[in-house]
Length: 221
Ligand SMILES: N[C@@H](CCC(=O)N[C@@H](CS)C(=O)NCC(=O)O)C(=O)O
Image (cartoon, rainbow, N blue to C red; front, side, top):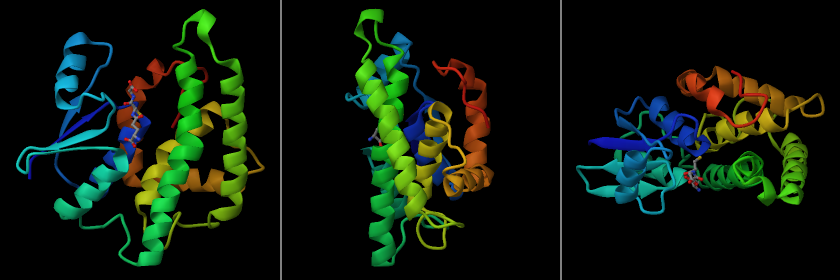
């Protein structure tokens, strides 16, 4: 199996897939997509016209897979993971899928809204949308604090898909809307995620790019 991953080291959705690859020591060729570089942009457009990453290309099977959770599904099915990330137990499986969506929808999307607003022209900022995004993240923190377990991983006993989604979502949400003493379980969970070797490696590799983050404070490990 020959895998190529189109990604950027700062891109939060790419982190989900990097964590899955590192968890299972799956070999792949990383292709850094620089959307600010014309050649890199056009090369990526040829691979995936919607221009959203991560995108995995399996050259042997002639498959191009987008959407972070679908990429993880593909790795589960075809890359022979030693530590499967999507539980076989049906109840743990639906809970993993549910938490994958919740971390993406309730944290990543409002976090992206706050960050991307910086790139809008001076007369085009969406101040109301940004305030709403901060309110949504605060509500997500309060909800997750009551629903997540006090220790271990998000679903069941094993590290899995939900944790791949939680790591970038919580890390970047905490950067733009810091967790505080009202959410001790979430703070501890983020601490455990940062210590997980797969995510620690993702963070180490992203650290040189943190200065490119468009808001202050910059992300910190
Ligand atoms: N639902 C997609 C989201 C992908 C996504 O939003 N990727 C961002 C990077 S984290 C992106 O491609 N941004 C570039 C752009 O929108 O131009 C997934 O789970 O992979």
